[in-house]
Every structure is written in C-alpha cells, then in structure tokens.
Length: 608
Image 1 (cartoon, rainbow, N blue to C red):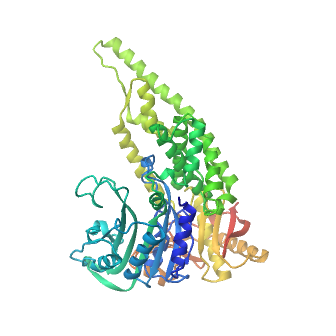
Image 2: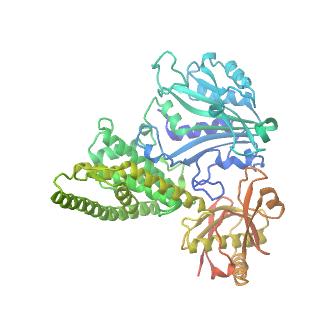
Image 3: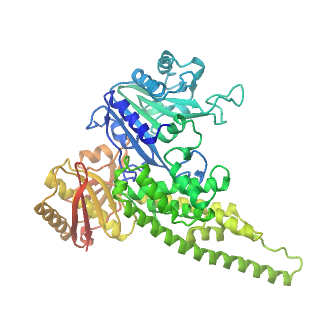
C-alpha cells in the first residue's frame, strides 16, 4: 500500500530528476488579486508565468499544492468529494513540449506507479474551425504503446483550455489521462465517454501553444507552455486499489476513531458512513484554513463564513451520529500529528491555536442551536394554535402541515439549522417543509454572499470601518518599505481583521529598531498630512506605464483595473476598499516584526 507521503515524494523526485525545481506551495487563502476566495487549482498561482512573466526559479517547475473548493459542499458525503485536496503539478515555461511531456506522464504512470499501459486511456482535442485536430499528441501516445482504441478525440468543451472572454492570452489543447476503476463494462460501448463512472480522469497535460486573436482566431505561440495537474487524492485511490477516498491513509485513522467513539460501523451503516465522511472532510479543511500561513477564523462574512459553515455542518453531523462534537478536536490532533505533520509542518506549530479556534466555534454553535430549537418549537406551537382556532371557526378547514420556506431559511440563516435538520424535526411531528421556497431564499442569500466575497479584497477577513482603515494603512506601509529597501519589495501575504493588520513582504534580514522606527514615523507622517485617497480606473498597460504596481495578475494589457493613489506616496492596483483620506486612520503602531518564511518578513501593527 502506498502512502500519501510516498506519493508526494515520488512525484517531486520524478520531476526533479528531469530538471524541475520544487517551488513549494502557496497559501490556501486568496490574497484578493485573483478574484477567488481560496486557491482552487494547482496552476492558479502560476498564472502570471504561464501568461509570460519570467519565473525566478527557471523554466521547469513542480510542486504539490493544496486547494480548497467549496462550490459543492453539499456533495461531500459520497466516496470521492472533498473540500480540501492536493494537486501535483509540473510546468514547462517555454521549455519542453508535447513529445517530452507525453513520454514523462506515460513513464510516471507505468514505470513509477505500475499502471497497465493496455488499460490507460487518453483524450485529445478533435479540432474545429479555429484550431486543427491534435494529431501530434495522438501520434506520441500511440508511439508510447497506448492502443488506438484507447485514444479518444473530444471537442473544445472537453479538451481545450483558455481564459474565457480574453484576447491575446495563451490557450491550447489538453491531453487527459483516464483509467478504469474495474474491468466490468456496463455495455458494449463503455469507454471514457460513458457516464457509468467506470472510467475516472486521473490527470491532464495542457499544451498552451496558441494565442487567441480578435474574432476567435488562433495563431501559434513562439514560446509554448505545458501545465500538468494530477490529483493526489484520486491517484492515491487507484494506486491502492480503492474506490473510497476515505479509506486512504489521509482519512483512515480519523474514520477508525469516529467508529470507535460512535460504536457504529463505517461500512455497514449508510447514514453513519455519510456522517463520518462529512465530519472528517470538514474538520480537515477547517484545520488547513485556520492553520494556513495566512490563516482565517470563523466569521459571518467572506472566507470566514465558509469556514464557519464547514465547522457547523460537521458539528451537526456529530449530533446526528450521537457523539460529542468535541470529537472534532480529536480528529484535528490526528490530522496534525499523524497525517500532515511532515507535509504541513506549520500545522504542528499552530496546533494549540487551531484546537482553540475549533473548540470556540463548537461552543458557539451549541449555544446557537439550542436557541434555534426554541425558535423551531415556537413556530410549531404557532401553527398548531392557528389550526385549532381555524378548525373551531370552520369544521371543513384543512390544517396547515407545511413549515414555510421563509421560516426554514430563518432557522438556517439565524440559528445555523441546515435544511435537512428542519426537515427531520418536522417529519418527527408529521409535518413537511416548503423546500422550494427555502431554496429560493437560499439562492438569494448566495447571491448576496457572492457580492460580499467580491468586495473582500486585499486580505480583509471582514469588511467594516476598521478593516478598511487597516487596508489603507498597509498601502502606506508598503510604500515606506519600498522607499527603504527598493522597488523590488512587494507584498507576499496579508491578513486584516478589525483589531490589527498582518503584512508579509520579501526582505533578506530582520529589520533593525531604527528601520522599524523610521517606517512607523513614515506612515504617521502620511496620516498627519491628510492626503486624499483617489480611486481611478484605466487599462492595465496604462496603469503600469503610469507607475502603478501591485500583486495583480492581469489577464491582458487591455484589462481595466482599479488604482488607488495617495499623491506623492503610493499608487497601487487594488480591488479596494479604502478610506477617502489618510487623516481618518489615527496613529499607526508597529507591534511586532518577525520571520514568516525563508526570505519573507512579517509585520503586525495596529491603529490607535
């Protein structure tokens, strides 16, 4: 049986032996520059370099990158869905291309991991009016020994990568690798196109060989890139002959503990199995988000709201499993001390902090759900009284038996009741819930949450008067750091709450007392000058020419960006928000300066 640690090591070793540099992983938490709340793909942090920027570590890169996707939280509970997962990636930035990449992917699968070459299937681009059929990749696959009947030509929706709505950006066909779960076809035409689930994609190689022009035309790029992504969790399943992701070493010890404390069987009790999967997955993702180098805590907005939802859903399933929610702290220790201790050493350093945050949220939710039960009972009593009153007035009156969607959503939104909890409680009383109306209310709530998330830029944990002030203070502070250490100084991470700012930047030494004092004075002098913070919009290329800077990954030179200017001090590309005048900030005080990671320093500061 291969372990997750061995799989990570084999991936990195394979590509390091072929001249790649392990660039490590970046934070799971979005920094406000990519338009997403969490890092959702292994290639996402590499986007600037795939679009043409030179990478400081060369043209051959590899890593294992943690990712968080929460769009399908409600799907977690089956054998293959996870909210946290890891992508194993490697990249060629204008270096090797299809011949080398198909050969290496094939070697990795067959020689390192032992896949049967006669069972490996691959899909390639079938071609259209804009770009030709990818016979080149297909030819390399056949030469490697993949059977003709196992190579499938699929359309643009399946085997093509590009940034939608852009012009002038790299794009191109991809080559996806599939393998059967078992040798029992559902029908005579059971192949990768069948929806029976027999074949599963285990990875893909994207070949960025074209540039998209106006009118949907494509031209060949001079420097072509390769972007490879293989799912660690999914590959671990195949290598161990499993079909259930919760039976790999990433979860097995946690599931075993949940079986022990609940006295229920994971394999023979379907409801218990689903509950155990949700508790294990949501606890793991919560550990990763709280323990991240730019870690977050539960809150009612943005990323903190997603974390709170994960924790509370896990707590609810502990209750359904009839075990104390404190078992999540036991699971947390297993994840940190036994499973991810070597892959994510920061979790070990932050273990006490992570446990404290999870424990606090458990206590908060238990208090909330108690209040929610009272609210639920109140709604039922109100319905029963109305039915009794109306029956007295009209013997033909048909009693109400449906809890309104509005009431169900209030229980969800205010008291944290998942819909299934309200449905279950209602069923016990012979009632139903208007789930259609609930879903309508929930959809409206999601749209509001999306709008709030879009506004959560620049590392703000929440968006309120104080976090906006702190955000502006980070701009001024970075301007001061650039004055001291040069224009190569840039933001490496940011986390802002209503109580303080935390800011990471590249620096090759511990700052001296004199440097810290100078920086503190610089910020306070800018505040004292009461300079207006001016917001403008222009094309990215014009903004850069005009002296603007920032950790912003523009999709094209013509993309419209927002610039915040503090005259004579700073001009940054940023999503905002900011105060209108520096005089609103108060007094800036640096509380601590410390190492964040190799070559990166961290400043913590407050506004009085």
